Amino acid sequence: MSYGNRITIEPGKCGGRPCIRGMRITVYDVLSYLASGMQTAQILEDFPYLEKEDIQACLQYAADRERIHLLASA
Image (cartoon, rainbow, N blue to C red; front, side, top):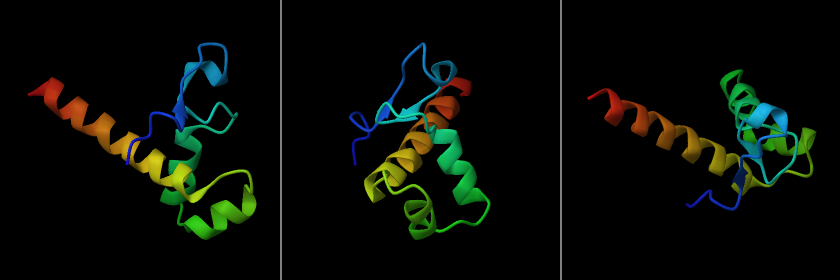
């Protein structure tokens, strides 16, 4: 899955952190909800403007960031 159209970074929004489709919900927010044990269905229920693909994009973005970090430290 490509997250290019789902994960956006705008310098003046949310301190330049990666957000979902230009909204004020960050990748970090979604990852935190998942890490705390929330299921995708719960997140989508609490945030009806999100889509399942948004959550998948957050996970892919985090995985890619980790891969880049590992490559940079090798």
